[in-house]
Amino acid sequence: MVDPRLAEVLRARLIRVAQGRERRFRGTFTGLVPASGNAVTLVASIWRAPAPAILLIVLPEGAPAAGPAPGAGPISLTDLEARILQGVARGLSSADLASELYLSRQGIDYHVVRLQRRVKAKNRAELVSRAYTAGLLDPGNWPPRVLAARHAS
Image 1 (spheres, rainbow, N blue to C red):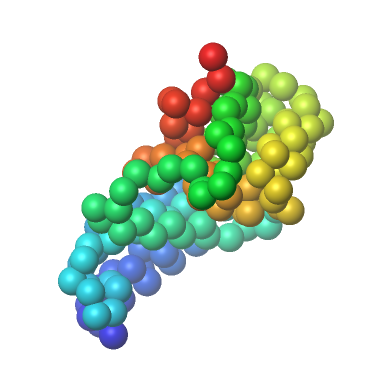
Image 2 (image 1 turned 30 degrees about the horizontal axis):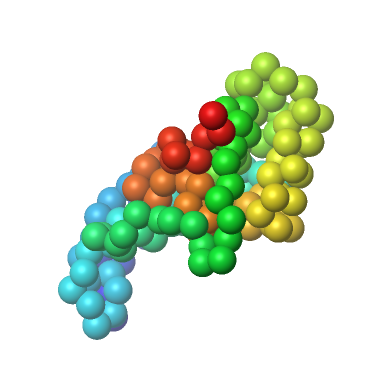
């Protein structure tokens, strides 16, 4: 059971993000996880593609840094792939990414599909989830950042 005051604060912040009055919020809370006194960090951001939604990430405090999934080979990304993955994780559309990276929308879509195939993801949300699981994205950062060790030489 979550403290009603905490629930009200979280609800208000999520509503502000959903209404577009805040782009994102990050906060550390204790008592959010039942039967645990451990703190968790919540990161919420508006997710624009393919349909508007709120992306909510829950990070347990003191959790070890993400590493590759067991049995998974190391995945390295070029600088462009890393920047595209970071944009997808931020919830940017292909058009927004194309404008930011000075590429065509079709070029962005090509790279996103390539990344999805590499991690066996069916859609952008699963791509982001698998990128965190594979240790490509640093769970301690917002906006999302690809770990330096995952950049191709």
